[in-house]
Length: 379
Image (tube, rainbow, N blue to C red; front, side):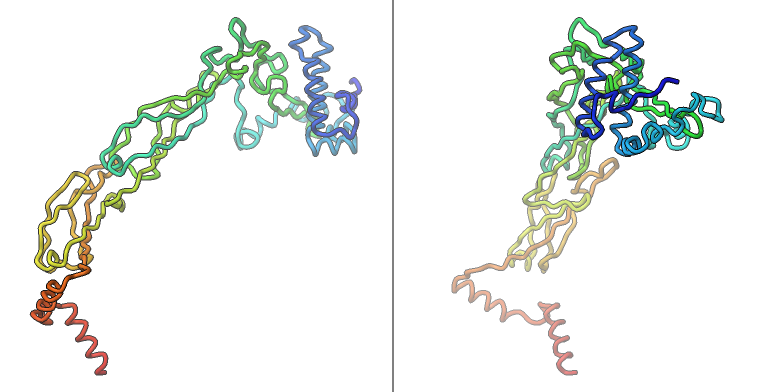
């Protein structure tokens, strides 16, 4: 077998070259010997493979350290042995095939073909709605940005009148196979093709509108129906409205985050609605008919005589609809008794007369408290 050249020599570098220098030298050499630029030239094809092999070792920190210390033997245990390398399995071992049967490939995920259809990624946006809209449901036109297929080149990445070429380095697969000898024989591993960056295609004349990517960012709008009963922080999923897929693959989804504005009178607790209603002292004593605001409009409710501060009454079925189900929550109304301030002399006199006319029987809680207080000090 032919003697391998020094990897630094292959890339035209000194041994102490930096990572950036290695990367730059690889790009220059790969471009110089790329098979697409020299069709049918076997020598350039071999040089291109040699450049790829050198870069694979020198760009890896651990491999480079072993190579610097032991030369080719540090990264190829059977360097100098026959092509078979004593392989007991009678051929090359594809580690990705072995590991995929257990873990789905290296990293738990087997790489697919570069030109296979791939689903686009999802996009997120936020829409703000009112408290009433969250209760009743509504329709919103939402504006957002997403990546679409370029309308100039229709996703090919090539300028009008031209087409991408199949990468000759990887045969259009987007992956290159690396053979390494080991005590078990020749081990095969795969990595993304450096020539086409894993796309499987070479674009010599890129589209000006998308710079050869085949994709462009656009502003889009979509009409979304927001269901009645939706809560603050929930997410609506709009299928096929995310970023465009690759190679004819489906688009991702649009995730719409719902933000509900707070209300000046109402508070949501689950699917129930709470509100406070202030009443006067006479209304609490004598009872009264109140006008109560609800999500469905105003309703009348009569409170009984002797209503106490913080008493709560319920309006059945006046809350939020149960999302995805039947029925509705309830509305709870808490009574706040407001004590008047800044009374004039006549009003104060009336209050004193009222106080004189009442007895302990009129104040059940007060009577109970003083009974307990009396018993406490007598013990």
